[in-house]
Image 1 (cartoon, one colour):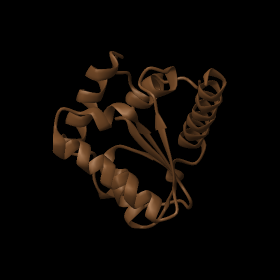
Image 2 (cartoon, one colour; image 1 turned 45 degrees about the horizontal axis):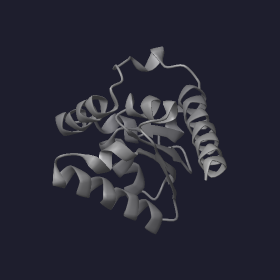
Image 3 (tube, rainbow, N blue to C red; image 1 turned 90 degrees about the vertical axis):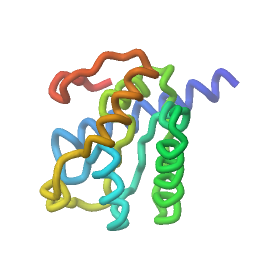
Image 4 (cartoon, rainbow, N blue to C red; image 1 turned 45 degrees about the vertical axis):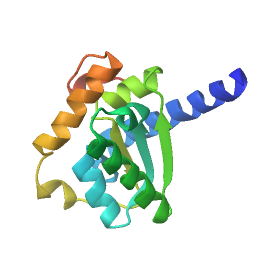
Length: 145
């Protein structure tokens, strides 16, 4: 069982590394925040969804439901879903990016122009940070794992 957990954690770290690398080299294929990821999925563009397990433990039932729905829709569209443990460093790093991110199949340059994350998105991120006990940092401060 421990070896299986180590393998999953290594896969999560590699996936998050890929996301951060893409965020710096091909920004139109790396999105984070609930609203951006949903809009990308609406265009069937999500190849891999990265989501923190703590979002499924939110005190708010509607918040939990919206993330479960997102996971289901990504899978329906043929995307891969990776659930990150908030107890692992990779999950903490993902939590600093609102807890939800996506690697896209194709660039969506116009998606970023449709507006910033809503207050609702920020509330989820604040709740996620509170549940993971990690500090909030600016995107530029995040390092590769």
